Image (cartoon, rainbow over all chains, first blue to last red; front, side):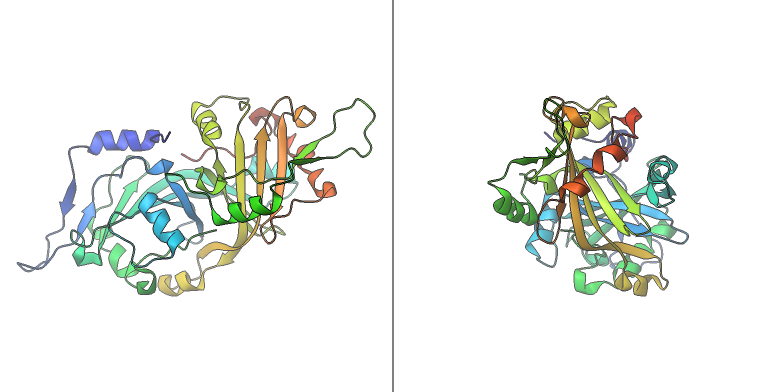
Length: 175
Length: 175
């Protein structure tokens, strides 16, 4: 039986009345405005593994990328573009040395997830999110479950748009 | 619906007639001998995420730790020792720079799973694996699905035995 993560429950409770917010600034009438997620997709912590990721530098991040059933099927079938209904979640944590593990191993080699930093989502809906390549982007701070502000959210699409050959998705499936 | 990973299918096919092998060398009559897994638990690639891990040095590894339903429930409930039936899987890959991602980011910061190296398991059965703290250990090469040799497998328990306060398990749950 699938179970919903406590974080997801807490955040969904807080955000349950809000469906999405629309960025309308600087857009001419009739031009599609980007839509960002304002609600964490429920149950994401129970989704299956797509891959893992480590980012050095300022991000200093260790992460897991999970996918809902539609995402996992698309990855395993190797079909692009991803179908509507696909949701990909990226769970990010600080990349921290594990003193506990290193003590056992006898050397400084082990890094594990530290404080959770954020959870990010890509939701495929080719109609709703037509203005951003069919993907709705979401970013939620782990500390309070709040979404990223508009200035930050505007950076998602231009960056992902550089990965056109994989339908705007950076992550490949880890076998 | 849960699906079984292709790797798991392939390896289970190869190993399906072998249940386990028993290390009997150097053991006095009547003394319990350690038992190692000789078969990959089916369906593990569909299990839920426990955490992720990065090992530097010779291991140079990026990994995901998954758990079956019993494992996930025990972790979330915070109950130790883990109950019989718990299975924890560690999927290991080479930790490699992603040139594709770094090109987009404009700096060398991104590391992703490279070639799969091995999959390791801990199976809790307090009777069957009494000689090794209630845990059966398994290691399978990603290249051919073959288990580790006995000399290698003998190193699992003494190392894990140093993590007594977490019932011989290194990995903590990532929220």
